[in-house]
Amino acid sequence: MDSIRVKGNGTLKGEIPIAGAKNACLTLMPATLLSEEPLTLTNAPRLSDIATMTQLLQSLGAEVSGLQDGQVIAMSSHGPINAVADYDIVRKMRASNLVLGPLLAREGHAVVSLPGGCAIGARPMDLHIHGLEALGAKIDLRDGYLHANAGKGLKGAGIELRMASVGATENIVMAATLAKGTTVLKNAAREPEIVDLVRCLRAMGAEIEGEGTETITIQGVDRLHGATHRVVADRIELGTYMLAPAIAGGEVELIGGRRDLVGSFSDKLEEAGIEVAETERGLRVARMNGQVRSVNVKTAVYPGFPTDLQAQMMALMCTADGVAELEETIFENRFMHAPELMRMGADIEVHGGMARVRGVKKLKGAPVMATDLRASVSLILAGLAAEGETVVSRVYHLDRGYEHVVAKLRGVGAQIERIKS
Ligand code: EPZ
Image (cartoon, rainbow, N blue to C red; front, side, top):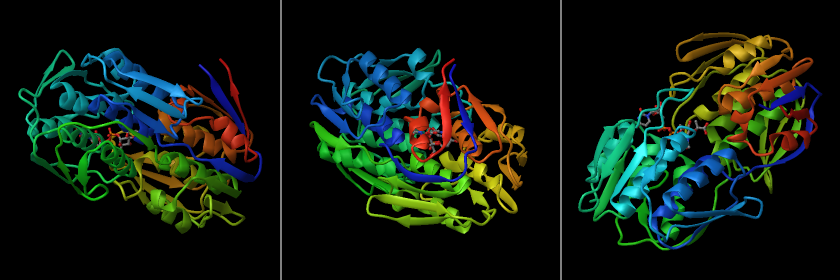
């Protein structure tokens, strides 16, 4: 297994290009199942999760090919569809469950393995099931697989989600595009990735409104046609790299970044004393001198502070000037980066969903281990300003969600390299 070695190397300067959003691409790709015509995605990120979704869609009978070094994904599912999503693919990536809604809408049945546990939490699918059953599907759990059947076809319905689940919203919206009649989805997730999915579905001929609000209304249509869609910028990659100059000092421009994608996160950075400015080409983030202030963070569904940036924000708070309280409200076990940061000298106390971080002067480089996607990058960020060398092992976690991380950070002056195992 490869590792990444990073050495504190002074302040950063330059620019980092922001890729297309992993979490938009992972819901846009299954949408190809909703039409027999080609669906092409541009500005796609080059990530192992995208390769996994490609493998899954191909196993279902879709044609998927990466063009232009993977930045364009050309898909077509005109052929016969095998509506069975195998455990050995699904267990690698929870987002595989996003084929459930499209398969039900397209084929009227689906067998999709439950994803199984994941490092950050149990991640059940009860909200997905509740929504799809409201559309008329019958879903049974047998030997670890969801067996779903839409009988004589899905019918529009009024659905209210107990909590604004991103994945459940995506599965329900995709299924409802081909249901008979109108679906009104209340307490829908409002993330930019949902807005991007709806824009793509609308380009395919779906009749949807309300995306980005808590109520999405879908008017079912008989069929969807092909489209070409540009994947929205990745707000989590953006927020992650905004923290690089915040932690190491200096000034970096994030090309393709947009403040509206990271509104509450940017507000928090400014509260901590970091400068965030919009530029022609994106966002400029700077910390010229002065101490970072400790700030309290509570993760929430969009537009609140993103849970996917909590680990990275903790890395910044480790050397801030006071005590920061980080409350994780979305996942039950998302502080696994804390013990690794403590190996670097961080002063962190974790009690349930709350982590209290007392800033120290400087962290010390150490060998640390990545435990999940976002935790792994928080260790690299911490290493940018630590004294000495930090070696992060198990970086396959990183490859899931960050393309060319070494090249992007080296491009702004970081001393970082990948060590092949
Ligand atoms: C999406 O996961 C993202 N993944 C996650 O990003 C992100 O952390 C999460 O949304 C929250 O923003 C993709 O988009 C591929 P949820 P998802 O359904 O859809 C509970 C990353 O690092 N829940 O909004 O699975 C669930 O257990 C990943 O890129 C139920 O209880 O998130 C969790 O506690 C990590 N029942 C909470 O809701 C359900 O049926 C949020 O889950 C579904 C979810």
